[in-house]
Image (cartoon, rainbow, N blue to C red):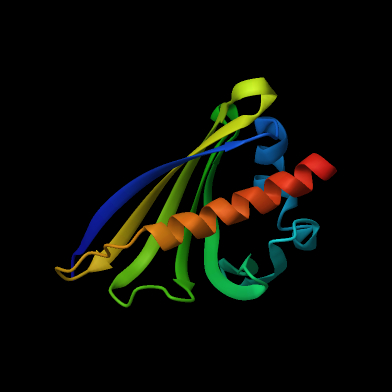
Length: 148
């Protein structure tokens, strides 16, 4: 069965320096997951990691995914998610290709290109909820890194 792909771009502005955010996400997050309020735990599941995330109102969601690529020279990384709460039935996986750019006042502009790999002819249409979850996670990370 062939997969169809829809990509959606989103940009987030954060007050934390990009090198600090990049190092935390690509190196420190999996070693110290509870350091960021959004992340409750990280469990190894073969090649993937199961991350338990507080997304809103104290509700915890789990996502099964892995860090696919790290581009240290350009402050970029790519990760995939193969299972999550409310994952659309026709979606096989999503990938996030994140580029961290220098932002205003020493902060970061995070450009996230999310690709939805779906089966069949019906693509997912409501991307707002997913964008809001990612924005919430970035805001939790920002708050943690500014405080530490």
